[in-house]
Length: 318
Image (cartoon, rainbow, N blue to C red; front, side, top):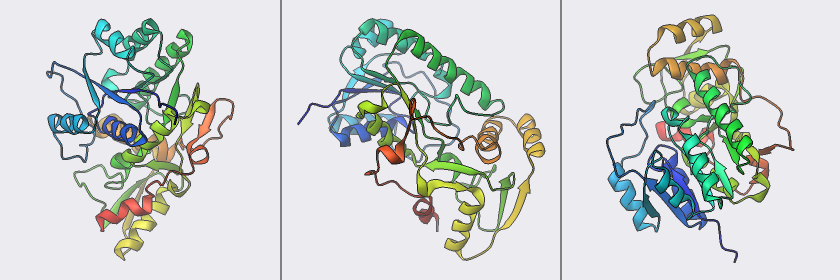
């Protein structure tokens, strides 16, 4: 059996990073994580990760599973280069506040000279194909700038476009309020509810990331995770939920003009979440044709992956 590439995950204790680590371990890749020795950094989350572990418990679980812990920091060039020299593939799952800091990772990869592939922190809509508004637009612009730097430096890459995580969009059917489960009486739908969106669980996003990392045909391409059973309009998702609970919800449709007004007037995190929802549910930023020369459709390239469907995901809330 061929020896699998050594994979380093940065941002390994985050809501997506942890699933990339576990997928790497499951796939049999020697797995490394970079962990700060300084714990003063505070993560700002949009949606609380549905994971019971503390960071310390998670790292201990990693160790127990054979994951190699490397102490270091994205701001320490020397330790970063040292970490890069130990691996073949680097996957960054850092949060949106650290997007621009990826230039430091690129510099370390360039100096190390041995990394076969870099996955920058994306894991959302395709930042080269969107019609989003601020505050989401500015994050996409930052991510697109990182892409251009990677390409200009000649760093081998793969971009992961996972679109909408179920934890952001479906845990409460994208309701901007304090409920943490899907509503059973009334639901607010942005736009007319007829625009296709692409949904994936965080666990499956981790799986597809590692599938792409082990796939030589994904080199220097973007991998698009638009799974057939999860490529749905919001009206279709609401219908699935109504069938499960045996009742019809009272629906309020919000026109784009009002959504844009609400985004401008809302504070964080609601303005950010509304802008994400607007991008996919109204502007249709998950609807596009791919170019085989530079794109990979995950469902076609990795048909053996058994992913969680939206229908299955909603069962936990019944």
